[in-house]
Image (cartoon, rainbow, N blue to C red; front, side):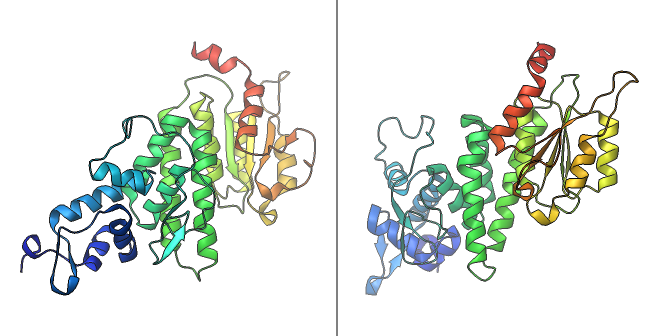
Length: 333
C-alpha cells in the first residue's frame, strides 16, 4: 500500500516529526490541524499534505513562535505583521503540550522552563526534538537581532539550566539533549568570536579556565561578547595548566586576564594571585594585568590586589571596557 494513497498513522507521523503522539493529537484538537481523511473505526490517516502542515508547525514552533500563532500561519490565518516583522523578546502564550505525553502548562517541552522568553521555548522544543538545524537558525537570529548579552542571559542560559535540571531529576535521561544543545550554543558563540576578530593593536584579553575546570560555555559567551565589541581576545579554553597559563600571560602581555571557575574545588586563589603579580613588557615600563575571577567557584571577596569578581557577563564586559576606555574605537577608527 502506498502512503501517499492511504496515509500513515498518528504514531508514524509523530516519529517522523520527532514529537510525541500527544503533541500531534493536541495540535489537531486545539488548532484544527488534522488529517483530511479517517479510516474505518475513526482511526486517523495522515496524507502527505497533512504531514506537510505539521512539518511547518514544527519549523515555526522551533523558532519560538507560540503554537497558536504558528497554527494560524499554517492554516492561512496569518495575523497582521506576523511573522515578517522581527520577533520581540516577550513572554510566550501560557500553555502548550509536553512531548512526553499529557498536557503541561507553560512548557511544550517537558522541561522545567518556568516564566521565560518566547525564543527560549522555541530553543527548548528544538533541543528535545534533537533538531540541530532549527537550533542553529534560532540562535543565529536572536544574536543578530538582540545582541550577544541578551541572547545569552535571556535565552541560552535559561534553556541550558532547564535541560540540566531535567537531566538531574530523570535518572540521566535527556543527556543527549543537553550535549547537543551545549554544542549548538558553543558553535553559535564561537561563530561570533571568529567573525568579529578585532584588528586593534592593543594588549589582548586572555580568557582561560582554571587548571581543573572544564566548563567553558560562560567563558565562550564572554569571548563572544568581547569580540562583538571589538576587543582583542586570546581564548585558551578549558583546564589550562598553571604553567601554560603563566607562559600565555608572559608571551601575550594582556591588559586583562579572565579566570573561570565553576566550582570551589577548581578555584585556585594562589594561581590567581600569581597571575595578578606577573609583570611583562620593556624594562622600565613593565606592567601587570587586571585579573577577573569569573564564575561561582570564586565565591567570597577577591583574595588580593589586582583581582576583581564580576557579578556576571554584563559586569565583566563593563569592567573590561573601562580598562580599555576609548582605545579600541580610536585604533579601529
